[in-house]
Image 1 (cartoon, helix red, strand yellow):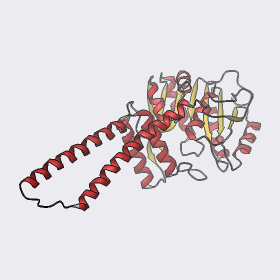
Image 2: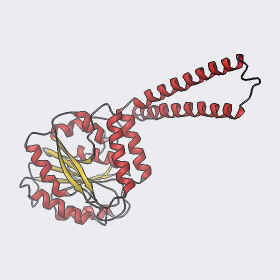
Image 3: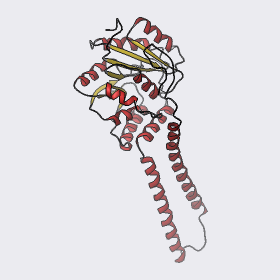
Image 4: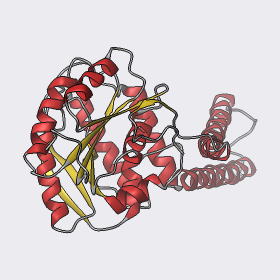
Length: 322
């Protein structure tokens, strides 16, 4: 199916790439084999998100020998979520499957996702049933995060479903039309609605290289998800303010009664007073910090900068993200 440029593309695969030179050839071999097995025309859109390790040269070599390969090179590293969005914006297929190049998500599962699409689903989630060779901390923290997001979010975000998923053309177009900058694609896809289905799979160990999601980036992604799809942090800050104020008021009443009853003869307790002042200051700073996170995201939106800039692409690509 990939021997000549297809006039009609049925399936598009979006692959964000950041410093994956060591594993990109193995990924492409498995991905193209999985797509060829479907028996329908396809394209594989690689998005180089500012790689520094020679990934772009590897991708250009792939394009030279495989006409199903399309390339998008961003002007710098914009982040995983924006790279996914850029790739989806450059697809033309009737389905769009997003998958990372590290081979933790097996390309062979794409056939199962496509089967669910043929059954009528617009969005097919790949749900992790098991994770191979991941630390207990990573597994436990990921599980806790997904469940926290489900509790906080105002939309139903599937538990244990990452960015590996399939979108119908109308779902992909709807996602591209959403312009927010601090993107949490998993939540945005869940917000779309449409008909959904799930496919469970076993997540493998990384084939090569190092993880591109250290703890700092995981925390940043978690904050983006929480702030983008929930105002509960603001409500919790309000509740915390009421609780602390009510506690202080009750303490004042109790201390006044004890003073009038003669149980307290002199003013004392400077240590407890200092602790109380620090507690109130901490509550205020937490509340201001929560407000600052939301205001910062508003600031990012009102500047109206493009989501990304493209440094290089093929003749059918777009040059600037919107």
